[in-house]
Image (tube, rainbow, N blue to C red; front, side, top):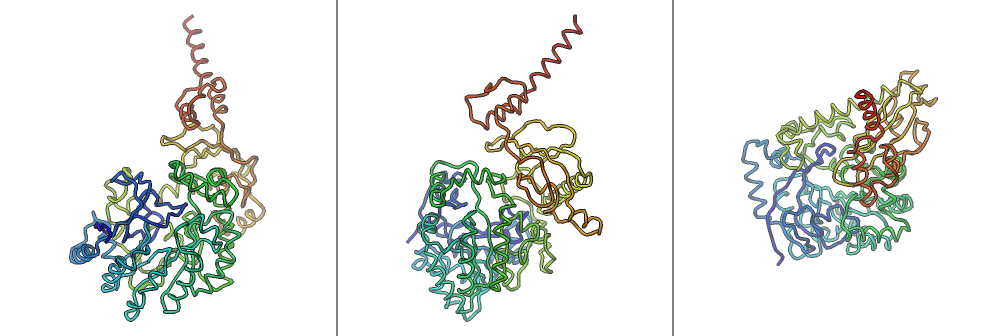
Length: 518
């Protein structure tokens, strides 16, 4: 018997971009030991774990207490201070397996996930099951068949290259085993999709054609793709795991994503130009094999990429609602089954202090207002063709544009955030000029600010590629001697320069004061 504890479903902090931000883990801990695992904080290194200890063993969730929670929740009035209860009452699909796989090998004996599914089946509750091991589910799925469970199965499979999988997912089932289990499930009438998460660039370009063909042969109806995220700051053990992937691909992954990526919160993500390469290929292959393609990358999905807004495949479920005021939801047409109650919930479920005391609706209203201001700013510079401006990228996701004045060199605390400055010119290409003359809309991807990654992409010509300012350049800009701040990390050197005053300016002021006194 494994240790058992109890925890309830929870709403995630991704409600701003996700229409289904509701999940539950039936296990904690994971034995698959995936090198790229975004949830490693919770299962091994535990930097965010309240218990402050690492673990790789499994802990099971108590289904008996979960059943009592469901009964208690359904019998209560709406309590907007408990978003997880509102989500459950609104029948927002429950994602099982968000940070720990619900089908470890021991599930065949313990049947913990099985017991949760039985409870949810009695309620005909909509469920998305995420796993790398569909064979365990296939071993007992027939026990649910007569009642047509309200499920969608999402199987993670990033490649059919078995050697590559052994490097990335050393303890997970092989691609062949997963595909065979998927075929067994689809043959029995259960809907299965595939999650190509994470897509590791550029190898994903090489792997996609064979992978999508195998997905189609297994009887799956759809797949999604999401790029790899590389944490900016990670412990040595985690760096070594990423290095094993890099050794196989013959390049330094962390350095590559730092060079070719953008900072998004605490991660480096591939820039949108390269994401489009694998997204375009995925969409083309989906059409070839008659599958649906969903973009799980937020920056693409929130611009309307893919065959629908529910990138986890929940559209095949019955009798459910979604969160219709997310960025992704707004990028697509309304579905008609959006929850009006979910937005009334207080944001009490994430660490963001700035959202304390606010409702989800209020947070989103502020976000949409900021996005509209940014859009208007972009339009302003787009209209003034030929005008020069600077783009300052010190803060992740908070690009600032300066038309006449150079920005102050600055970087936020926390490490990993470095200043980038680019000189650019707003230039209308012939295609964009024609669209404007004809009154046709210009896509977001054709706007000048789309080149923040420094790639030569749609609609913009630029004088030079974005690059990071060196510490010595920052010292010179502030009037200090070369290597004046040497001896500490580059991040601290940038911070020191940002907090400093410009020496030549102070010298000039001093000379003026002395001259006035004399």
